Amino acid sequence: MSAVLQEPELRLRPMSEDDLAAVTSVEQDAYAFPWTEQIFRDCLRVGYSCWILEQDRSLLSYGVMSVGAGECHILNLCVRPVSQRQGFGRHMLAHLLRLARKHLAKTALLEVRPSNRAAVQLYRQAGFSEVGIRREYYPAVKGREDALILAKDLTV
Ligand SMILES: CC(C)(COP(=O)(O)OP(=O)(O)OC[C@H]1O[C@@H](n2cnc3c(N)ncnc32)[C@H](O)[C@@H]1OP(=O)(O)O)[C@@H](O)C(=O)NCCC(=O)NCCS
Image (cartoon, rainbow, N blue to C red; front, side, top):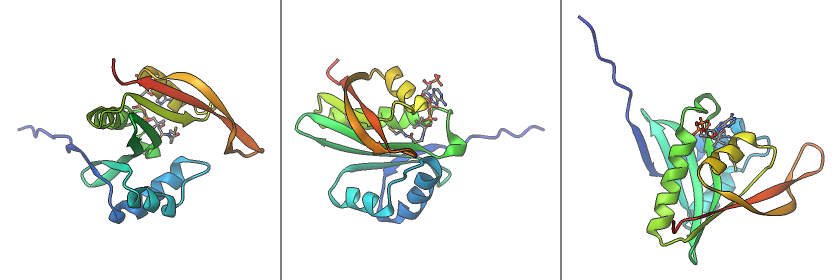
């Protein structure tokens, strides 16, 4: 007799204050310069769109986005390191862009470090292109790093 093992379902849901410890822990594992728990708390307080992707109640990915005035700004998108390169980042990004369209955003914007190859590739593959540079935007091990500003037209 053979058993059929089913993958636990992926679930997208809004982030809440109860998620902040887990989110902050992944954030610290995933970034050299992580956001603090207070930054996530503030994003929830001001009503940014903050989402969790989980499987079997275990956090895989989260995304934070502001939407308004016909634009959305993706402020954070992260997949826990052990689950990277399995399509979860793409899944979360697609969810955020779907939501932005629902809120009538015509353009999606974000900043990314040019050295962040995985993220730059993810965004380019999703149809983002470079529209500018913010000089010395990010802290870096040695001084500061520029940010690429990427944009995507959501009307097409
Ligand atoms: C960037 C990040 C969100 C990508 O998420 P992910 O789940 O690992 O990526 P996916 O598996 O969905 O990959 C989607 C595409 O992104 C690109 N990509 C992802 N990881 C990559 C890597 N290590 N190297 C090159 N390209 C990569 C590829 O184009 C990939 O498509 P493909 O698998 O068909 O080639 C993830 O690496 C991460 O959380 N990094 C740390 C936090 C971060 O830097 N966030 C972005 C801030 S702007």
